[in-house]
View 1 (tube, one colour):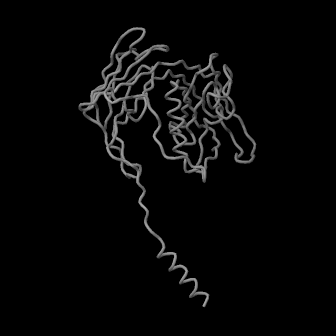
View 2 (view 1 turned 90 degrees about the horizontal axis):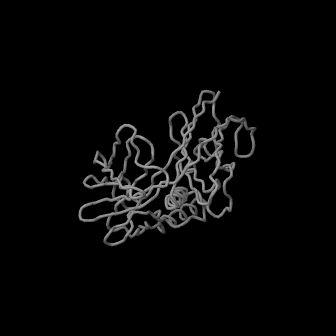
View 3 (view 1 turned 135 degrees about the horizontal axis):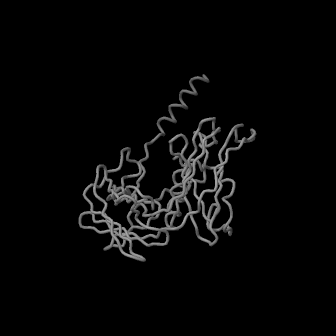
Length: 293
């Protein structure tokens, strides 16, 4: 009798199961601008694609028929044409020793896609030098295995409003998990900290280490090479990456998940004033490397 009741209960649950299709309000694709440039002497790449539905299980469609130019608008004027390549890439290749600009200069991005024109503006913000990368032994504690771990030492500039992206590479592999997206604002996490001109706080210093699938830090071993880059960010780029990180980690928030939304960008349609997706940022970069002994 008990087995029969369980069978009937299972059957009733099955018959009450309906497929629910969520409406995402996706209509027409939007232009997506991936314009992360640096002040370094080397080729600079902008990627253009079209947005797609949140549930589309495919790679984005590249935009291969656009015109792309970046102009330095202050204190002098110079324009750099980004030539089309494959898969929606547009590349500017500087002459030997040439750079797109220097700290304090202002820039405008222009994109023509079909009959539509887009424009974005940014400035090249400062970045501090990296003082050192230390390798320290940590004893086992809650959430951390015993072993060697790296820490980044750098000091924020005096003056409120400096934002940075910390990019870490271990053995030539960029750390790009959502939990490894390491951002700093005046050496802490956000603009509301009230700090300025201090050394980067411990959680940011320590977050240059690799994490595993569960988000736990992975200890280093002898021979590992740790490389760190500091990229300066505009306020718009810092906010863009912060929202993107929250969205990428949304599945880890349990019952407190936030609504799915696009990160706000700084590239706009000239005629409609509607925002394209993505961001335009030109970063000053500082670097350091250390091999674990």
